[in-house]
Image (cartoon, rainbow, N blue to C red; front, side, top):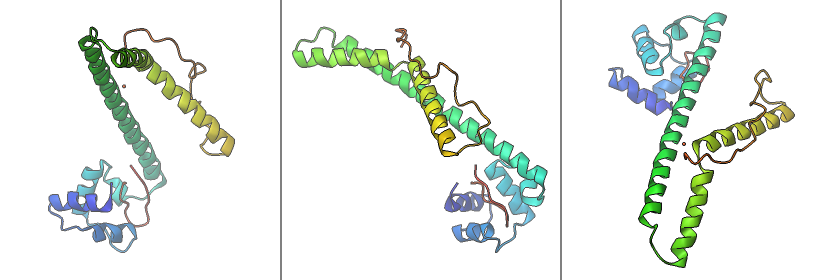
Length: 181
């Protein structure tokens, strides 16, 4: 979340914040009042102790919560992509039906290409392609020393594409604290 967006959220909750207020807070030049911390916790979906207690346990808990938020955001992005893919497949099917009896070389060529894309752009193939890319990314990270190396980047068959089936989508920190959501 940007500094300006956070300031707007705080202003909407009755706190006279501006972007500069957030910047001063992040730089440790301003303390957070308890009422402000409560509002920040709500806005940022963070526990209140994030702003009031500095402990190793709280820091680890924040890492875990951040991972959960990022996982949920990624899930939502995939769900939105699936919805869009299904919507585009339906539109392609409609075009195919509407133009089934159309005559002309250009329409025939376009329909052949559309049918090919309809076979190739299934949800199953999109998932396999995502896994292939993830595996490739993991291999690049392993080779460059990036990443923590604790997770297997993808199943063994991640790069194997099967034929289409025909059923064819920041946390603003208290002084001295850093983090993202």
